[in-house]
Length: 154
Image 1 (tube, rainbow, N blue to C red):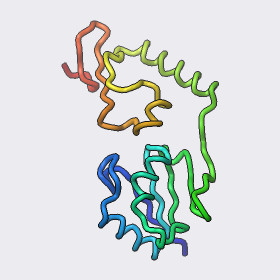
Image 2 (cartoon, one colour; image 1 turned 120 degrees about the horizontal axis):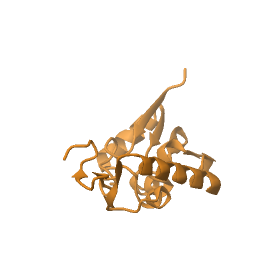
Image 3 (cartoon, rainbow, N blue to C red; image 1 turned 135 degrees about the horizontal axis):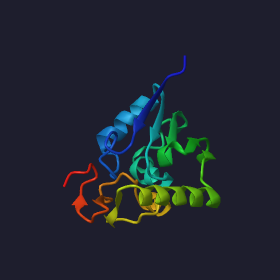
Image 4 (cartoon, one colour; image 1 turned 90 degrees about the horizontal axis):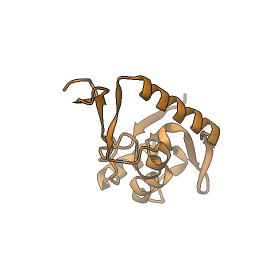
């Protein structure tokens, strides 16, 4: 019988964008002695290196740990080092088609982007932070120009 425990990183194993604390690193290491563990997060592999791997000791069974960066679109497993087993990336044509479709939907809706506090490009945001980070806030406005919240309230 295979056993696997899966965790989200930010807000579960560690505070958002913070490294595992000593206690959590020890608990995770103990769990790796018993079952396979997978960790998923919106950030890319360097975030895992900073938040997780730098806080685990080399005597912990890393072969029992799987990492799923960028919301599971990549998969890393430890052999004699960390190896990327797959990466589901959009090609340039797919990115263009998605961006064009989103722009069309925004243009046809009664809401539009009024102001952003972060780069709108998901690709650029993914390199630095999760798209769900608290640094990214979108406000909207009705076509009449009256500012509203995302749920339509004034």
